[in-house]
Length: 233
Length: 79
Length: 309
Image (cartoon, rainbow over all chains, first blue to last red; front, side, top):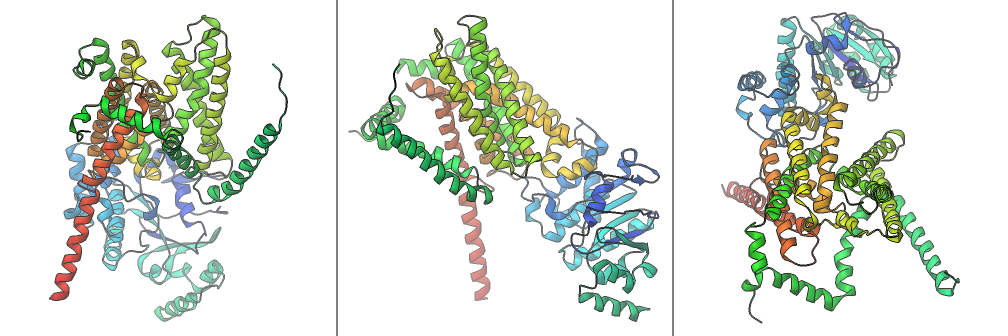
């Protein structure tokens, strides 16, 4: 359950969604995608209702949300990103696979295209999901914890791709849990704990006071982050 | 059709009630352990054993019949 | 021996049609079963098939009353089966969505209650004057021997239709089974896809009742697809192999049941498919026991080798 969400996100920025566990970070993303019911209020994407803009949204779900034992290979999963564009009943063609292979190459996994997905490492699985969203060629990307439990190589690969996306004028909303890297990765930040505590450009919004309001001063880690923030200034 | 209640009927009802209680008690744990259908699997798996236990001779004969009906007989050792 | 040869060489027109019919059924069950297995709803087919029983009995009774003694028309019995089967599935979904009871418990409730109701109704039918409940037992245990060529055609055509729908929606169902929320995200209605999948399961289960029987029809949905997983890591190949195993075991079981006296075809079909499962479990080239042993040993040797160096 998430209350009092009233926010506008500027286009062409990388947006971090930050908050403690159970704060409703994933729920916010799922609400935009209409995967969970919105009880009151409305969500507009590029000024229009979601249904009209569906093809402009790319989605990276949490890695644990699927069964990685499923009998498909990496290329199959990436190709799934094109299913919406291909449409009902039409088969997948060679040019679709070609496109998917390019996306896999972009995340550095082209040589693992035919590997069964359970034989990929956690970070590689995350990159497959990212490639699947890239192949959607969306303008808005919604990513649910893409940095959760990934190796350093994957983390830097994802960051590089996020920066590329920003260069192309695209927007990405990223659920993030690592406070240490927020200031480094994102231009804009949304702090959530059951409701939106604060939102705005990272330099002004990601402040010790707002973090205290979000986390209630429970984390000892908070002090560390606040210290680092002060040092940076 | 006349029907009189006998001691045997009492025992039948008591047995049914006790079996019901035992199952209900165990059932709690099955549901909580998310193994509800385990009981189903076990009860179905009992069937061949019951058949073999109740009719040992007939079971053996039937098995022999089934085998003799198939061409496998020719591959079995003589005797 | 004469009889055996005549059955196996498919001399009779009737035998030939029945064999083709059950082959189509096995194929369709293998295909549909693969998607049910991957959707983690493998036992839904079991709840469904048990739930068809009271419907068959009611249809039998009604038809017995209307057309005296004509209670054995297959289309009538099967429509009764569809109605109560769908009702059973709806009950499972309702219990799961409205209460906190988990799906497996909901299925346990529905399948036992519906089957109990059916058993009670069968008892009443046996007492009904002039009616012969022997036809019903074929639905419980499966009896290919009682199939007419019309029945076989009906089964074959419906099975082929199911396969056609599955081919048409292969891509969508694959996405549904792998990642439901992503499917929604790219604009496929997962509710509609689930209804299509459940509809297909209903179709093949109901036409499969006569051949395999309602207690064991679940085997034809699960065992072929579970066996196929041992051989491959690709969904397309898995579907093909599951269809092949399904068809093989259905035909093999039907023939064995025809040759060996007093064996219901449901039992022989299940045992045949179990044979296929056992072979796949041991020799399957992707996940079989032998290949796993070999990779394990290889890894051990490598470790030992490295330790020596």
